[in-house]
Length: 303
Image 1 (spheres, rainbow, N blue to C red):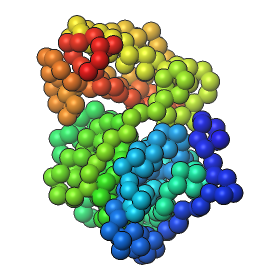
Image 2 (image 1 turned 45 degrees about the vertical axis):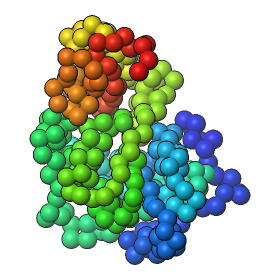
Image 3 (image 1 turned 90 degrees about the vertical axis):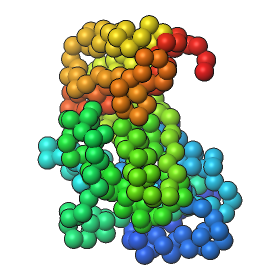
Image 4 (image 1 turned 180 degrees about the horizontal axis):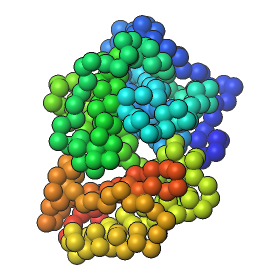
């Protein structure tokens, strides 16, 4: 096992095909398509951890014998702002390939920037619209343009029948689903549940930047979300008040936002399904998290 509980490949595990170009990717998937199989995609920026593994396993749950699962590994420069951590973002392709081998991934697509953006920054990009201007979009105004553009390019390159994205990046998941519908991409976008460390911190490649004290502080994000969920039966105002109460005690956190929305990121309902989202800086690291709640019903009451 790797640190964090991620399995590594043994000597008897078949390694995935590594495709560096779209032509190599097409060749690698040709046999699958020739026999009528489907293709599933898990899009990542590498530095794979147990959260990514859970997405691969979700893809395996819906695959048939003749299907193929592709993991893309590409640190997308278009989604990083000028003051963000593009240069230092963790890159570990050899270790990532071992993880993919252990998880029976068929193809790893690991293009370079020149393959994804041969003319440099593209002139035509995917604009996220109003949903990209709230929450993360207020803090990172160009981020979702970069995300949607690279996902559109990955969809065009891999031509997946289905793709799995994590709920940790909930706004991203909503936008990708909307893009797939609005642009008739014919890709089924599935959601994978957030995977957490002991103590509740959502797994993220950026967690490795945290020291022990910062990691302990970061757990306040999940504690705040849980406190909000526990107040769900009392309504939206109590949900936010309970979550804010936890965050107020974590004085070293720099809160960016704490918001309650509908599942589609609109105004929260008076009762029914809702989403509680939070973002904050912990030392040098900016972390996001969220949870689904049902307003008007105790958090421990089953659906």
